[in-house]
Length: 353
Image (cartoon, rainbow, N blue to C red; front, side, top):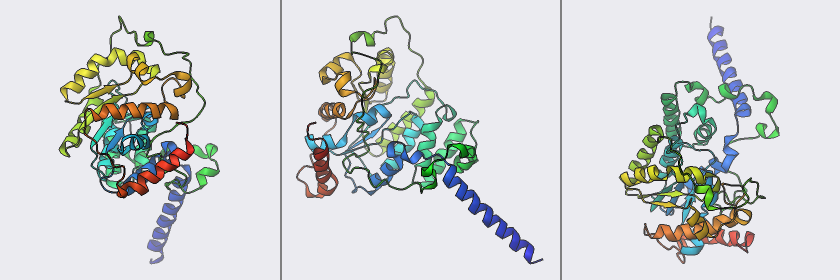
């Protein structure tokens, strides 16, 4: 009789070990996309109250705002939590994580989902990525429950145990799947500070930036997403509770020119109603002011390359300082290791930018 409970316990332990081993191999490695896990950990290790600008948004912001350039120009620090794909819900939870460690002087958000009603099942990559790269177990649990609450098609167990979602990946496995996951990338540059800094040959269908791209005469905008507005309102509230202003920024994404123009009046009305100032760079006049062209400054029709991000960041910082007072940390020895030394590395890699 005594052997039976021992066998049950032994079987349960063996099952847990096998399940855990299979899950560690089969789960999709979201941690390498945008280096989000690495960014989360490095951000949490930054000196207390050392971040002035916290950027939350999508890939256009990720590739556009380069904090190290802002430090070089004006001594203003920052961190970029932009990432590929878009979701107001995950932006809110990423913000909550960020605010656990820093109280920035300003939060910058691209409000890219104001017209986007996509549920987690329709935008699975960004939800999976943020969930699986979230170091804070309590926030991770809250996010999983929120996903299952708003999207009844989602299974709590498949989010808590990714093996249940990715059990059929056997034919897709590579050597990388058998290595440890959730490790800080040792090659992540200290000067990157969350930014994309994309440096690849351009691939896009547009040949030139012309005013006609913004022509939306006769078109009617779709209604705004109350689903996404709910999470943006929560973001604004979370910042204001901490005395942090929020500023909206709209990137010079040329492929989005038509929809940006079409949606602008409704977007501006929403931001004004929430008392959120905005910087809109997705206009022909602003693109001309920045001096951007597709061949030299974009890696496709939407995203800036490194050269474009340097130009954008300099102008963006000047404009932002007209809205929010930001300190100059240059010459402050407390910032040397985390900012001055990485700046020297950045200049060594990009001497001509």
